[in-house]
Length: 303
Image (tube, rainbow, N blue to C red):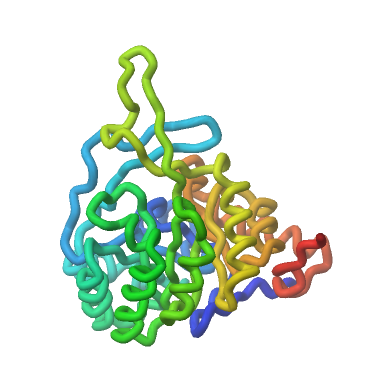
């Protein structure tokens, strides 16, 4: 039997398959489709200090081999998350990683500080990279100094593991990753969506109200894989791979490139049980290949 367990700082995962923030709600939405405890971990929808309505519609558009979204981080806010969403999440045995975002460094720190009072949160994923939020969201992940400062200030208020989520929409993702690592991040997750656009040729209008949005899905997998490989070679902290993973074979590519774990995102829109199928596929493949631990595969790319 293969040991699929993973350690990311003090965070222990039974397997390397996590859900991606923004694609899995607060978990309860998928409870009828799968045993959530089979997941390596559940990353929540982004939570901000105050509730957000998100961007005006239309805010989702299907594209070849993917989708564009400009959702704008709608969420219930910290207080309602704790009161209404956490009671269900706290019943699960799988680690719960809360994704946090803010309009300013102070917002990030205040949100994490409020969550510190909630027992059982396994880690925080810091959303520095969403390209759909105009109020500073992109700046956190496009400026190494800003990324380092917000990480440093959050590190000062929590001992829980911190995962910095990085955008590919920068000149050097490694520079941002290094800044987060040096400021106290325990891991990075990459990549978030690529900036993209679609046009209705009959109306000659953009298909998204915000004109541009974030491209996700299988179309971005080669880009994601290359960025993960770059980060693995640059950083000494674990890298969590995200981007177009819809099968165990996709997940294995990221692991062979050096990823400690992976997140399943857009695939869950196409098939709600996708994440569990990736877990099961990993188990079957490793058993067939005689792999006893993920360490045998991680970073085993042959050049």
